[in-house]
Image: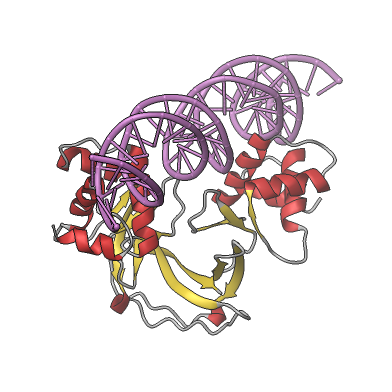
Length: 132
Length: 132
DNA sequence: TTACTAGTTTATAATGATTCTAAAAAGGTG
DNA sequence: CACCTTTTTAGAATCATTATAAACTAGTAA
Protein backbone atom coordinates (compact mmCIF):
# COMPACT_ATOMS: atom_id res chain seq x y z
CA UNK A 1 0.00 0.00 0.00
CA UNK A 2 1.42 3.31 -1.07
CA UNK A 3 -0.03 5.32 1.81
CA UNK A 4 1.49 3.26 4.62
CA UNK A 5 4.84 4.98 4.46
CA UNK A 6 3.31 8.40 4.05
CA UNK A 7 1.31 7.94 7.22
CA UNK A 8 4.16 6.41 9.20
CA UNK A 9 6.46 9.23 8.22
CA UNK A 10 3.94 11.68 9.63
CA UNK A 11 3.70 9.85 12.92
CA UNK A 12 0.24 8.54 12.09
CA UNK A 13 -0.39 4.82 12.43
CA UNK A 14 -1.53 3.35 9.14
CA UNK A 15 -4.83 1.96 10.34
CA UNK A 16 -7.30 0.31 8.02
CA UNK A 17 -9.64 3.28 8.27
CA UNK A 18 -6.96 5.84 7.51
CA UNK A 19 -5.73 3.88 4.52
CA UNK A 20 -9.25 3.60 3.17
CA UNK A 21 -9.81 7.30 3.63
CA UNK A 22 -6.50 7.95 1.84
CA UNK A 23 -7.79 5.98 -1.12
CA UNK A 24 -10.92 8.07 -1.29
CA UNK A 25 -9.10 11.36 -0.86
CA UNK A 26 -5.85 10.96 -2.74
CA UNK A 27 -6.33 8.22 -5.28
CA UNK A 28 -8.34 10.26 -7.75
CA UNK A 29 -7.14 11.89 -10.93
CA UNK A 30 -8.28 15.34 -9.92
CA UNK A 31 -8.18 17.14 -6.62
CA UNK A 32 -11.53 18.14 -5.14
CA UNK A 33 -13.34 20.16 -2.48
CA UNK A 34 -15.52 18.54 0.14
CA UNK A 35 -17.38 18.93 3.39
CA UNK A 36 -17.25 16.21 6.04
CA UNK A 37 -20.77 15.23 5.12
CA UNK A 38 -19.90 14.88 1.44
CA UNK A 39 -16.82 12.84 2.31
CA UNK A 40 -18.95 10.59 4.48
CA UNK A 41 -21.24 9.90 1.51
CA UNK A 42 -18.27 9.25 -0.77
CA UNK A 43 -16.79 6.80 1.73
CA UNK A 44 -20.10 4.98 2.04
CA UNK A 45 -20.07 4.46 -1.73
CA UNK A 46 -16.42 3.55 -2.19
CA UNK A 47 -15.52 1.67 0.96
CA UNK A 48 -17.10 -1.63 1.91
CA UNK A 49 -16.46 -1.29 5.65
CA UNK A 50 -18.35 1.22 7.72
CA UNK A 51 -16.24 4.06 9.05
CA UNK A 52 -17.68 6.01 11.92
CA UNK A 53 -18.34 9.71 11.48
CA UNK A 54 -16.12 10.48 14.46
CA UNK A 55 -13.23 8.75 12.73
CA UNK A 56 -13.81 10.76 9.58
CA UNK A 57 -13.63 13.96 11.60
CA UNK A 58 -10.53 12.76 13.44
CA UNK A 59 -8.80 11.68 10.26
CA UNK A 60 -9.56 14.80 8.28
CA UNK A 61 -8.26 16.95 11.11
CA UNK A 62 -5.16 14.82 11.46
CA UNK A 63 -4.49 15.06 7.72
CA UNK A 64 -5.11 18.78 7.76
CA UNK A 65 -2.67 19.24 10.61
CA UNK A 66 -0.05 17.26 8.69
CA UNK A 67 -0.64 19.37 5.59
CA UNK A 68 -2.29 16.72 3.41
CA UNK A 69 -5.51 18.72 3.28
CA UNK A 70 -6.31 22.40 3.39
CA UNK A 71 -9.24 24.10 4.99
CA UNK A 72 -10.87 26.68 2.75
CA UNK A 73 -11.82 29.95 4.45
CA UNK A 74 -15.41 30.57 3.51
CA UNK A 75 -18.59 31.50 5.29
CA UNK A 76 -20.70 28.42 5.36
CA UNK A 77 -22.31 26.42 8.09
CA UNK A 78 -20.09 23.55 7.06
CA UNK A 79 -16.31 23.48 6.82
CA UNK A 80 -14.85 22.98 3.36
CA UNK A 81 -11.63 21.10 2.72
CA UNK A 82 -9.46 20.81 -0.36
CA UNK A 83 -7.26 17.91 -1.48
CA UNK A 84 -5.35 20.41 -3.58
CA UNK A 85 -2.68 21.57 -1.17
CA UNK A 86 -0.77 23.66 -3.69
CA UNK A 87 -0.68 27.39 -3.22
CA UNK A 88 -3.87 28.50 -4.93
CA UNK A 89 -7.14 30.37 -4.52
CA UNK A 90 -10.89 29.95 -5.04
CA UNK A 91 -13.93 31.21 -6.78
CA UNK A 92 -17.11 30.74 -4.82
CA UNK A 93 -20.26 30.58 -6.89
CA UNK A 94 -22.85 32.08 -4.55
CA UNK A 95 -25.82 30.71 -6.46
CA UNK A 96 -24.59 27.15 -6.92
CA UNK A 97 -22.75 27.21 -3.56
CA UNK A 98 -19.78 25.61 -5.27
CA UNK A 99 -16.05 26.21 -5.13
CA UNK A 100 -13.84 26.44 -8.21
CA UNK A 101 -10.06 26.39 -8.13
CA UNK A 102 -8.23 29.50 -9.16
CA UNK A 103 -4.60 28.75 -9.84
CA UNK A 104 -1.97 31.09 -8.62
CA UNK A 105 -1.15 32.00 -12.20
CA UNK A 106 -4.76 33.17 -12.70
CA UNK A 107 -4.33 35.77 -9.97
CA UNK A 108 -1.72 38.44 -10.38
CA UNK A 109 1.09 38.40 -7.83
CA UNK A 110 -0.08 39.56 -4.45
CA UNK A 111 2.17 41.79 -2.48
CA UNK A 112 1.23 42.45 1.13
CA UNK A 113 2.81 45.79 1.95
CA UNK A 114 1.70 46.12 5.57
CA UNK A 115 3.77 44.31 8.18
CA UNK A 116 2.67 43.26 11.65
CA UNK A 117 5.32 43.37 14.32
CA UNK A 118 6.62 39.96 15.33
CA UNK A 119 4.29 38.07 13.00
CA UNK A 120 5.05 36.08 9.88
CA UNK A 121 2.73 35.54 6.97
CA UNK A 122 1.68 31.92 6.91
CA UNK A 123 -0.65 32.05 3.95
CA UNK A 124 -2.42 34.41 1.59
CA UNK A 125 -5.80 33.21 0.44
CA UNK A 126 -8.06 34.91 -2.07
CA UNK A 127 -11.77 34.22 -2.27
CA UNK A 128 -13.54 35.57 -5.34
CA UNK A 129 -17.31 35.55 -4.97
CA UNK A 130 -19.29 35.06 -8.16
CA UNK A 131 -22.84 36.11 -8.98
CA UNK A 132 -24.92 35.88 -12.14
CA UNK B 1 -32.23 60.31 15.34
CA UNK B 2 -29.78 60.07 12.51
CA UNK B 3 -30.44 56.41 11.73
CA UNK B 4 -34.19 56.69 11.21
CA UNK B 5 -33.88 57.91 7.65
CA UNK B 6 -31.15 55.43 6.82
CA UNK B 7 -33.35 52.55 7.90
CA UNK B 8 -36.50 53.90 6.21
CA UNK B 9 -34.63 54.38 2.97
CA UNK B 10 -33.64 50.73 3.06
CA UNK B 11 -37.19 49.59 3.62
CA UNK B 12 -36.48 48.68 7.22
CA UNK B 13 -38.79 50.02 9.88
CA UNK B 14 -36.86 52.09 12.39
CA UNK B 15 -37.79 50.13 15.48
CA UNK B 16 -36.38 50.92 18.88
CA UNK B 17 -34.22 47.79 18.81
CA UNK B 18 -32.78 48.51 15.38
CA UNK B 19 -31.96 52.09 16.33
CA UNK B 20 -30.24 50.94 19.48
CA UNK B 21 -28.24 48.36 17.55
CA UNK B 22 -27.30 51.08 15.05
CA UNK B 23 -25.89 53.14 17.90
CA UNK B 24 -23.74 50.25 19.06
CA UNK B 25 -22.56 49.36 15.57
CA UNK B 26 -22.16 52.64 13.76
CA UNK B 27 -21.73 55.33 16.39
CA UNK B 28 -18.13 54.55 17.24
CA UNK B 29 -15.03 56.34 16.06
CA UNK B 30 -13.47 53.25 14.58
CA UNK B 31 -14.96 50.36 12.67
CA UNK B 32 -14.67 46.93 14.28
CA UNK B 33 -15.06 43.19 13.82
CA UNK B 34 -17.49 41.15 15.87
CA UNK B 35 -19.30 37.87 16.31
CA UNK B 36 -22.98 37.78 17.25
CA UNK B 37 -21.99 36.74 20.73
CA UNK B 38 -19.60 39.66 21.12
CA UNK B 39 -22.24 42.05 19.82
CA UNK B 40 -24.72 40.64 22.31
CA UNK B 41 -22.29 41.42 25.15
CA UNK B 42 -21.66 44.91 23.81
CA UNK B 43 -25.39 45.59 23.60
CA UNK B 44 -25.91 44.37 27.16
CA UNK B 45 -23.33 46.93 28.31
CA UNK B 46 -24.41 49.88 26.21
CA UNK B 47 -28.16 49.52 25.93
CA UNK B 48 -30.47 49.73 28.92
CA UNK B 49 -33.29 47.70 27.37
CA UNK B 50 -32.92 43.99 26.82
CA UNK B 51 -32.75 42.96 23.17
CA UNK B 52 -33.44 39.32 22.43
CA UNK B 53 -30.74 37.26 20.78
CA UNK B 54 -33.12 36.39 17.94
CA UNK B 55 -33.55 40.08 17.22
CA UNK B 56 -29.80 40.58 17.14
CA UNK B 57 -29.48 37.77 14.60
CA UNK B 58 -32.35 39.17 12.55
CA UNK B 59 -30.98 42.69 12.62
CA UNK B 60 -27.41 41.77 11.76
CA UNK B 61 -28.62 39.72 8.81
CA UNK B 62 -30.92 42.50 7.66
CA UNK B 63 -28.09 45.03 7.86
CA UNK B 64 -25.73 42.66 6.07
CA UNK B 65 -28.26 42.18 3.27
CA UNK B 66 -28.60 45.95 2.92
CA UNK B 67 -24.83 46.35 2.79
CA UNK B 68 -24.34 48.07 6.16
CA UNK B 69 -22.26 45.17 7.43
CA UNK B 70 -19.94 42.69 5.79
CA UNK B 71 -19.43 39.06 6.62
CA UNK B 72 -15.78 38.09 6.80
CA UNK B 73 -14.89 34.75 5.19
CA UNK B 74 -12.92 32.86 7.76
CA UNK B 75 -12.93 29.39 9.22
CA UNK B 76 -14.34 29.69 12.67
CA UNK B 77 -17.26 28.14 14.46
CA UNK B 78 -18.70 31.62 14.76
CA UNK B 79 -19.48 34.06 11.97
CA UNK B 80 -17.47 37.27 11.94
CA UNK B 81 -18.89 40.59 10.78
CA UNK B 82 -17.25 43.89 10.01
CA UNK B 83 -18.67 47.39 10.35
CA UNK B 84 -16.05 48.51 7.85
CA UNK B 85 -17.86 48.05 4.56
CA UNK B 86 -15.17 49.62 2.40
CA UNK B 87 -13.34 47.42 -0.04
CA UNK B 88 -10.58 45.95 2.10
CA UNK B 89 -8.99 42.77 3.36
CA UNK B 90 -7.88 41.06 6.56
CA UNK B 91 -5.04 39.66 8.50
CA UNK B 92 -5.99 36.82 10.78
CA UNK B 93 -3.72 36.28 13.73
CA UNK B 94 -3.95 32.53 14.28
CA UNK B 95 -2.56 32.66 17.81
CA UNK B 96 -4.65 35.53 19.11
CA UNK B 97 -7.62 34.56 16.95
CA UNK B 98 -8.03 38.19 16.03
CA UNK B 99 -8.73 40.01 12.81
CA UNK B 100 -6.81 43.07 11.67
CA UNK B 101 -7.85 45.31 8.79
CA UNK B 102 -5.67 45.38 5.73
CA UNK B 103 -6.52 48.36 3.59
CA UNK B 104 -6.72 47.97 -0.13
CA UNK B 105 -3.65 50.15 -0.50
CA UNK B 106 -1.68 47.68 1.62
CA UNK B 107 -2.33 44.93 -0.88
CA UNK B 108 -1.08 45.31 -4.40
CA UNK B 109 -3.78 45.47 -7.09
CA UNK B 110 -5.38 42.09 -7.65
CA UNK B 111 -6.12 41.06 -11.16
CA UNK B 112 -8.23 37.96 -11.64
CA UNK B 113 -7.27 36.61 -15.05
CA UNK B 114 -9.55 33.60 -15.19
CA UNK B 115 -13.15 34.20 -16.24
CA UNK B 116 -16.15 31.98 -15.53
CA UNK B 117 -18.79 31.87 -18.19
CA UNK B 118 -21.93 33.82 -17.33
CA UNK B 119 -20.68 34.85 -13.91
CA UNK B 120 -19.68 38.24 -12.62
CA UNK B 121 -17.19 38.92 -9.87
CA UNK B 122 -19.03 40.22 -6.84
CA UNK B 123 -16.11 40.59 -4.49
CA UNK B 124 -12.46 39.73 -4.06
CA UNK B 125 -11.42 39.05 -0.50
CA UNK B 126 -7.93 38.35 0.74
CA UNK B 127 -7.24 36.63 4.03
CA UNK B 128 -3.64 36.72 5.24
CA UNK B 129 -2.98 34.27 8.05
CA UNK B 130 -0.32 35.29 10.56
CA UNK B 131 1.83 33.13 12.80
CA UNK B 132 4.63 33.95 15.20
C1' DT C 1 4.07 -15.95 20.18
C1' DT C 2 2.69 -13.32 23.92
C1' DA C 3 2.06 -9.55 26.68
C1' DC C 4 2.19 -4.55 27.09
C1' DT C 5 1.34 0.21 25.98
C1' DA C 6 0.04 4.04 23.52
C1' DG C 7 -2.68 5.38 19.86
C1' DT C 8 -7.26 4.68 17.42
C1' DT C 9 -11.94 3.72 16.57
C1' DT C 10 -16.56 3.84 17.83
C1' DA C 11 -21.40 4.80 19.33
C1' DT C 12 -23.41 7.96 21.71
C1' DA C 13 -23.97 12.07 24.35
C1' DA C 14 -22.99 16.86 24.78
C1' DT C 15 -22.17 21.39 23.02
C1' DG C 16 -23.12 25.52 20.89
C1' DA C 17 -24.12 28.58 17.03
C1' DT C 18 -27.84 29.46 14.35
C1' DT C 19 -32.60 29.09 12.68
C1' DC C 20 -37.45 28.23 13.35
C1' DT C 21 -42.03 28.95 15.41
C1' DA C 22 -45.97 31.10 16.65
C1' DA C 23 -47.85 34.42 19.55
C1' DA C 24 -47.54 39.18 21.26
C1' DA C 25 -46.14 43.87 20.25
C1' DA C 26 -45.27 47.85 17.46
C1' DG C 27 -44.94 50.74 13.15
C1' DG C 28 -47.33 52.96 9.38
C1' DT C 29 -51.38 54.44 6.99
C1' DG C 30 -56.01 55.78 6.29
C1' DC D 1 -58.69 54.92 16.35
C1' DA D 2 -58.70 50.62 13.28
C1' DC D 3 -56.32 47.87 10.40
C1' DC D 4 -52.64 45.34 8.41
C1' DT D 5 -48.01 44.17 8.02
C1' DT D 6 -43.62 43.88 9.99
C1' DT D 7 -40.95 42.99 13.92
C1' DT D 8 -39.80 41.16 18.35
C1' DT D 9 -39.55 37.56 21.48
C1' DA D 10 -38.86 33.25 24.33
C1' DG D 11 -38.22 29.03 23.71
C1' DA D 12 -37.80 24.92 20.88
C1' DA D 13 -35.53 22.72 17.07
C1' DT D 14 -31.68 21.89 14.06
C1' DC D 15 -27.36 20.47 12.81
C1' DA D 16 -22.29 20.55 12.48
C1' DT D 17 -18.85 19.54 15.41
C1' DT D 18 -16.53 17.94 19.66
C1' DA D 19 -16.21 15.20 23.87
C1' DT D 20 -16.50 10.78 26.32
C1' DA D 21 -15.19 6.53 27.65
C1' DA D 22 -15.06 1.80 26.49
C1' DA D 23 -13.43 -1.56 23.08
C1' DC D 24 -9.97 -2.40 19.80
C1' DT D 25 -5.43 -2.40 17.31
C1' DA D 26 -0.63 -1.39 15.85
C1' DG D 27 3.93 -1.58 17.22
C1' DT D 28 7.36 -3.32 20.16
C1' DA D 29 9.98 -5.88 23.16
C1' DA D 30 10.55 -10.08 25.74
